[in-house]
Amino acid sequence: MLFPRVAVATLAIAVASVSLQAQAREITFGHVGGPDSLFTDSANYFAGLVNERLPEPYEVVPFGSSQLGTDSELLQRLRLGTVDLALPSTIMSSVADEFGLFELPYLIQDREHMQRVEEEVFWPHLAPLAEGNGYRILAVWENGFRHITNNRRAINTPEDLRGVKLRVPQGVWRVRMFEEYGAEPSPMSLSEVFMALQTGVMDGQENPLAQIAGQRFQEVQDYLSLTGHVYTPAYLTSGRRFNNLPEEIQEIIIEAARETQAYVYEHAAQLDQDLIAVIEEAGTEVNEVDTSTFIEASSPIYEAFAAEVPGSQELIDQVLALGND
Image 1 (cartoon, rainbow, N blue to C red):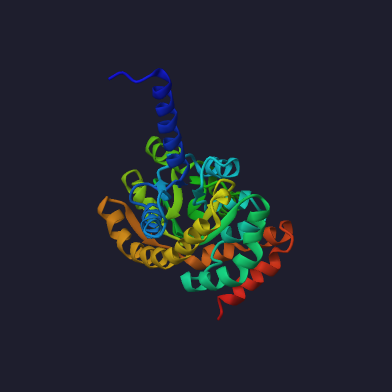
Image 2: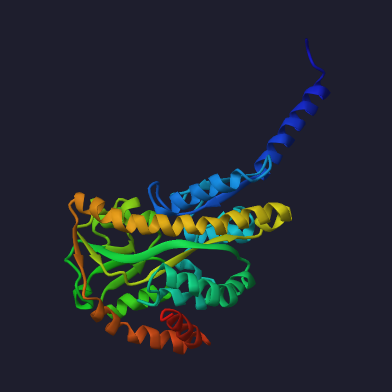
């Protein structure tokens, strides 16, 4: 049987319309974490949790490994409304200077300390700054405590970093910190780091264990030094397109996002215990460091941050006080 051309055209338009509607209800979640990273585990756990609660045809779909762009590209796409959710970390200091607070070395003691800081410092003071720049932070997750890998030597004190070409994320205070320690830091997207280490463009990099193992850096790095120099949160962040979702859908997503934090912290703590052995098994030499020498060398960073970011000394003092509870 032959269908009239008008009927065929109408059917085609209807099919296309249904397809577009389904696509519009796919809630895209981009991040830079590799397949075995904490970011991927966190995103997948969250997607499983929230998709059990979302009514059809809404569905959160994670895209890791920078499939939807680098951190800076994802921030831009949140503003443009071409991505619903992203998981930035250090790069948030490019959105508001005050986020550089979490680039100060040895500021956060542990995850319990971070939870107090989240409640009393982050939500009242930092989250509104992000929102003022077009980003709505839905929940605070984790990137983690950062350590240094390199191919030159074991790092025991800041002096050992002199002349080491070190990849760092896009955050001005991370660059300045490692310059103060004597390294030669260069910002670079995470997706480019493995090749840079493999070819010798960079001697080393610094990341949490979950990112180091998830990106397989142990395959191209000789030394892992457990500096724990910075704790970096990760922020489940939304933008323009998310704000157009029905309010009840937004509420379901936010509730699941904040519930996910308990899983993230527990899983991250377990990875911190398990991944050192994984990295050692690849042939990477692991060493502890003289933390006191790094803390002593960090004073100029605190002084510069307090001097250059208005109101930051009060934030620093508040965070330090919360560590003594």
